[in-house]
Image 1: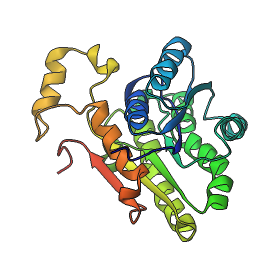
Image 2: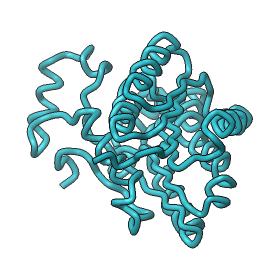
Image 3: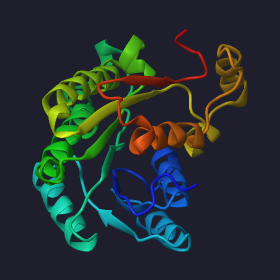
Image 4: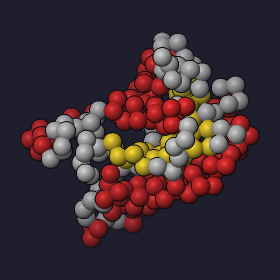
Length: 249
């Protein structure tokens, strides 16, 4: 059963990692996927072809979600390319610039807030008019367990992800009467290409501290997104779902 048959989806930051995993699972469920990348053009074009091979419409767009103007231009282009409809927006683009507060530069704080949090404002604002006209839509914001509990050495990242949760709940309250839902997902330790470069002993230590005794996969996050994007969650809005193997329990 395909849960997203013919739905048009925008995913920011999907050329690798969690975003790529979401795009793949969504295409398997019949969604047409428009996704953005910032600099990794070759992997993005490769993913575009992979998704098309699944029998759906797919297109990669180079776009900086931290730019208000580029977000507006992106949504206008997607509407033109995808028959004037957007059903789901997934705000996934994000970066880290970790450091202790005493060593963190203003530039590193501002950059993380712009890319992780302001991008969510930019993209949500850009799709809002379309969703209001349709009187239906689902917005999914990729937060983090760090945004729920905080983490030493990540004040900028934690602030951006906690801000995303407040934004999510406010949008849910504002747009609920128009049948537009907004939810957040808070991933825990997810194993991607980035974690493969880390020391195995350190990674195993993290796994041992998780009740399910493993790191999450991109598919674990994609399946949570699938629930929020599909009609299975028609009566769910303003929620934060921790997908963390029990880490915050």
